[in-house]
Length: 115
Image (tube, rainbow, N blue to C red):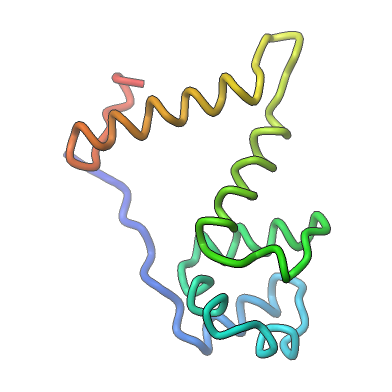
């Protein structure tokens, strides 16, 4: 079975560079608590944090990787709402829960046909 290979963690140099390329100031990056910088070493967490910052979320609200991902998912779900098609945030959340259960039941794999 084929899968998607996720990228490895950033080095601290790559992380600083990605932060600046994402439109943030380098000095702000180095002022972040070490714990947050460690969380941002994961490329998806970094991209999500940059997306959140671009929408006005403050640096103080980033906190942990879980917090970053929860805020990012909530932001994305709100953008996908389509009342006319009856696609609500609650429906999208339920779909994500179903997918996570399928992943857990299938050793980390979900066949597209099962979605």
